[in-house]
Image 1 (tube, rainbow, N blue to C red):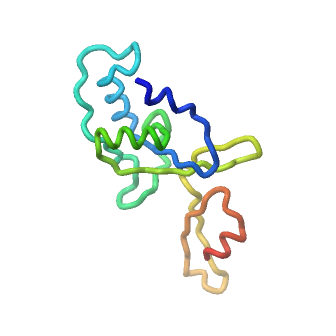
Image 2: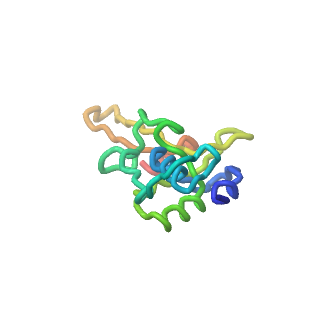
Length: 142
């Protein structure tokens, strides 16, 4: 299967990468006999089911979920192929950010910040920001 072999894993700032349920991905790999360890008769994996990767009624990934244990990160092209063949979802797209001069990563969870105005401490404003958001951008958003 050339689908995952064509993706060289090069992260480019601003790209979208996708989370996919690791259980579904393993069943799919078994079904298509993705590698030499795939043996026996595997059943069709059914539609992609990413429901357990999100907190209810949000697009947030719980902190208790871990890459390689609960989800895998795949390229946009891989997601588009798998989704067109099997359907399902929900789609969980995440952006690549530049974390330092030489490093980039897929931002799975943005920062959730609470803002409290000293003149009105009972009013708490909650907002999500990327780890690379500047103070100026935060001020403009608020």
